[in-house]
Length: 372
Figure (cartoon, rainbow, N blue to C red):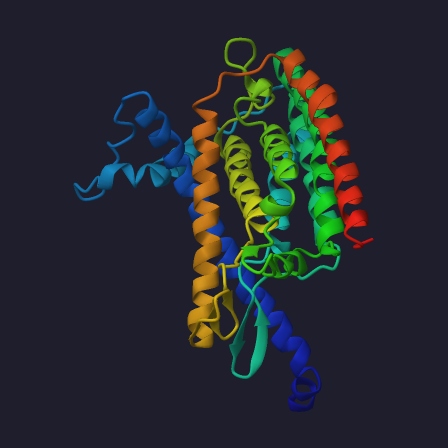
């Protein structure tokens, strides 16, 4: 047994490190996602001059509604788990899993820091460093459409089916734009690995401007964020659950099955926020912060401890994620809902041509600069 551990020590350490990173990172994401369910209602209340949820209490403490996510979870657990008599029971049961599991799996390739040294071992701060991580994101995110469509079709409810068909058309359309907006980034940074792309954004343009994606690809940033909101089925593109027309593809779901759909939607908000920060705002990068500390363009420097640098990088990534998650909530409660024909026209007549134009312009600039 001792010989086995000695011979496979590297493998065991790698597996243990990956498990620890998954436990910590996904645990933080799920906790933040739970808080977003409260933030959603608090943001809407603030914008509508209301107080918002503030009644749930533990031992008389309300903490401004902080216990409401836990109260919601308890309520969902004890609700009746209803299954329509005409429903396709197997697919009806699997649909929430198709919606939730791909979203959680996508967090594995998002780098939340550079690296940290632990007992002499270099520990990269991401769960899975895939060389084609960006393609993994695009491929697996497309799986979520099965959860949406199966939920509506398996319910055998006409209104749920209408919402599912809308969702399928919307997600397929905007997935094309979503992929095309990222081509320019891969051309500039020369890699499809998210960690490599973040590290490349640490370079300086003109000796002082960080080479963040939003600087190199401003049009792609706008197109990406718009397509990502539509792919997430969030307002103003929440046509699949328009209350004035239909209830939505999940209308026959209750209890924890409905909770899985709701949790998947809020987890997608966190995912979009993290991808936006990673691809366009430097991810864990802090301007002028390197492995040894700050090195400023004018020649000044400030040496910092390795662990302090790693902590600052993780904190920077967390702050960017929180900001964009808040921004997505504000957009949800600011803009009016599009009509379905407007939604599809925006994709095929505006965003898609602009995404193709962005690729053409990126190639022309790189050719002019001798980068191709």
